[in-house]
Structures are given as C-alpha cells and as structure tokens.
Image (cartoon, rainbow, N blue to C red; front, side, top):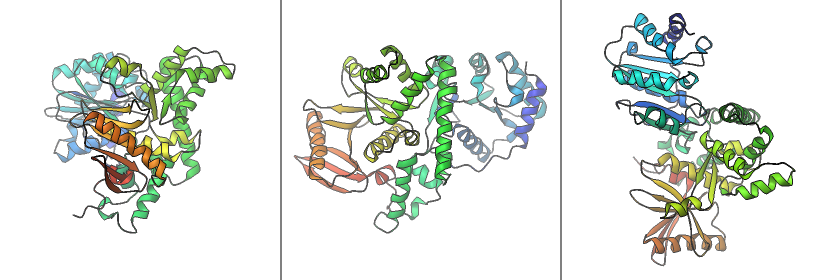
Length: 436
C-alpha cells in the first residue's frame, strides 16, 4: 500500500524540482480542452519532456505552481500503487500546497498503477482537475486509452525528432540558412547524420558514434523485453527476436508473412503464420514499426492488399544492417507525413494496373501524390518515377505530383502534369531560404 506519506515524499521532490531546459517539441497540446490528455509514443521519444513543455506553458500563462503537480510512478516509493491508493495523492497535494481553482495533474507512467483508468475517470468527472498522463508504449497505447476512457481523452503521439527539431537540437538556426549558399553544406552534413543514425533525442545530442549504437541497442532491448515480452507474455523469445531484427532491417519494403514463414522454416524453426502476424501487430502496437496499406476505395480491397512496413527510427535499423540511403529517405518521408497527418487524413501507397507504384498518396483536404527518389540523375530512374506520377495523376484527375530527392530541385510538366522535384530538407522545412 502506498501511503499519504509516500505521496508527500513524491510531492517534496516535485516542489524542489527545477524544470530542466528542454528542446521545444513541435507537439501542440490543447491544455484548455476539457479532456484527459494522453501522450503516447515509442520509448525514449521524449514524452516526459513534452509534459515539462506543457508545465512551462502553464507557468508562462500565470498558472500558480501550487495548481500544478507532476508525479513519476516509477519512483521507488510509489511502486505497487493501486487505484485505491491514489486518493491519497490528492490529499497529500492539498496538505502541502494551496491550490485555487483547477489543478493540473501530470502523471507519468500511471499505467503501472492497477485499475488506473477507473480512478482517472472518477477524478475527471469531478470537474476539478485537468489530467495529463503518459507512460512507456507498452503501458500507454492510444487505442487502449480510447477504450478505457471512452471519449474522455485526447491522445497525442510523440515521435523522435522531426528534421526541423533535429537541426534545432543541433544548434542550427533555420533563419540563418540559405539554400543557395555555402551553408547548404551544413544542411546536407546534418541530413546525412539524420539518415544514418535516426533522430531519437538522446542520440541526436550525442556526438560519440559508439555510444550512439550502445544507446540504440539498449532501446531495442527495452522494447523487446519490457514493451513486448512482458506486455504480451510472449514465450517464443528467439523467434520474436529474429522477427524484430528482420522487420527493423526491411524498412520501406513490402511485408510478407509467407516469406517470413519460409525464412523461419529454412532455419529449422517451427512457427505458424498466425504467430508471425501476431509479432507484426506487437511491433506496431509499441510504435516500433508503422504499416502502410494500398490505396483502394474499397475497404475490403485495401485490407486484403499487400502492406508496406516502415521503422519508427532509422537508427534502430542501423543496429542490424547497413543503411540503404534510398530506403532511408523514403522512411524519413513516411515519418514526416505521419507527423503532419491531421484528423481524417490518410496515407497510403498507390499500385497502378501497369505495375508502377507511387510511394505515397495522401488524402484529406487535398490529395497529393508523392514519389521518393534519392538520385534522379539517371535517365531511366527519372523516367520511371515521373511516369508513375503522370499515370496516377491522370487516373485520379489530379494536376500535379511531387518527387522528393536527396538534393535535386526543379519543376517540369509532362503530359499536362506539373511535377515538382524538391530536396527532402527543403520539403520538410520550407522556411529554409525564405527571406524575412
């Protein structure tokens, strides 16, 4: 049992906490919403720092610190807390502080607490508290939060740094960059690092290559053991480990459960196709991979079509395979599209009857065709990419398409379809080169 004195101890830590300097994340949390705020995402993506960002925002608005408190349920004094203990948390806060009006409650790793959702619903229904909760991905998944809180929540997903956040974290000011100057070399140097080692915040800020790989390896182990094995009680340790290494290496590629099954069979390992599909779902549920369905008007055709898989951070792939720059660039585009995705928006790939493919088609306010090609200098490569966009645009009644490259920019019109070639770094941060 966790007592009032235990919670007072945790409150004392909060009272003495000097909120660290944090890199502002491009996650806009609506703290004025009368909803429970749930922050989800892959392990070590910066969810706790987003909490601190929210706290700083409240303080800047003039909210008294007495009306804000932060609790980390991984604190050793709080281990074993149950929902019936959590009322003591509110009692401890009232004893130690003098809140007036609404109290903002930040609960980190609350999913460790048994039956936490019942307590959160109860406190939410009083109307006296604003609750912001987060935790490791195996304990806090957006789908589960939605089920537990039944419409009482707003869920935000925190990803590793976007490219804009990445260069800002490296101390580079976007306002000083010009695309037609020697400073472009700075952008490309940082972009190469981004493609090679990914953008987890801790990795971004660590210049030591060997330490980066050690840290990434610890992330993979934590995802493997804590997020999947412990959560789903998987007994096939060896098979799962092999599968996760395969799926991490095969980013920006079609996923085939049949090929995976044949691979295991070739190694003399007995495993069912259902188990492989379960492994894939586990990897998706903890945000290790993202899946992309084929663009089809029919839901049945979309679900039954082939799926492409992408890794949440290219650095994880770096542990098991050399980085393929073309596929890494496509993976980076996928993640940027996820970050920009609004409510009701869709992201798919498009397979044409001719056999050609467009890497991404986005849907929502406006449909957009996006092709990814690292190097378009070869005539055959360029023709293949443009012909797919032209065919898709004519089929769908669109007038333009975009080809994202490593470092090529140009516009052209083919068969009445406007095609815009743009480097990834300029597509991801269009402010570069804009004079103010």
